[in-house]
Amino acid sequence: MGIAEQITSPAGRTGLAGLLADPRSAVVGLDFDGTLAPIVADPDHARAHPGVVPALTALAPLIGSVVIVTGRPAATAAAYGGFAAAPGLEHLTVLGHYGAERWDARTGAVTAAPPPPGVAAVRAELPALLTELKVPEGTFVEDKERALAVHTRRAPSPDELLEELRAPLGELAHRHGLVVEPGRMVLELRPPGVDKGAALRGFLAEKSADAVLFAGDDLGDLAAYDEIARRREAGHPGLLVCSGPVTGEPPVAALAARADLLVAGPAGVVDLLNGLAELLSS
Image 1 (cartoon, rainbow, N blue to C red):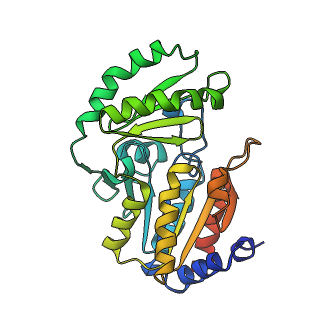
Image 2: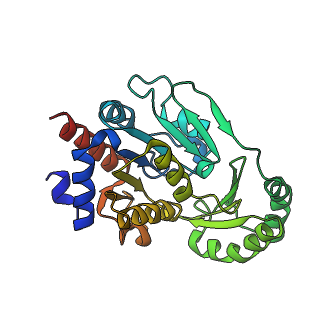
Image 3: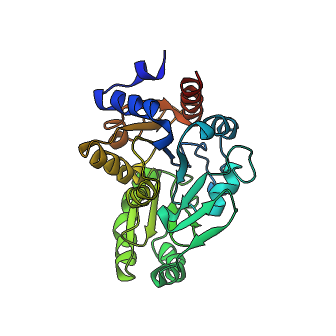
């Protein structure tokens, strides 16, 4: 079955048609974890699906721009993705920390604004708070430099624990001018006003883009979905893709309900990217 036949909405089919009609003004935007890289128990062990770089290498020369939009540090996503020095990806961009950092493949350089002071304060207080809350073994903190993420994936009853942690982590974040962003078995404490929608909006304006495809897998990607919905209302074609889990658990309902196309995890995203490259090169 072709890509068009898999799309479930008229707006999605219009989005695909717009991308194919004028690929040089189109942008393909991609989340990293859960979209290009399988979700793993330890985020430091995440690596892009082995088919990602070959698929992007085939697609990137045929499209206006490819951008990775992630909550990770930009250089980390570039390294874990294997994007540095990959032939054909010289114009790839990674927007890390929801746009607060930018990595350009052409130079390998990262540009970033100074981190907000609230992150350092939360970093200092979070261990004592988790000890006070007596969180179970398996709960761990991922330091993203500009944000801190508390993961419950490896703890007993991870969803229940996540709910228990929402209020105390929200209070800690609020006290230091941060917000809490929930995800799949993770709560991220980060500065307000930064999200994937804002990051994508700035990038699209810079590129004077028309059609946009965005693929994501978790609640943090909803802001990018919102941006594409806003652009659709203004007449710009857009295609929303949801990367669903391949472990038997359902996709994130809020994304799946709005997506024009549901694919089976990073392998499904690779198939989609390869399919687009074939359509554009035929």
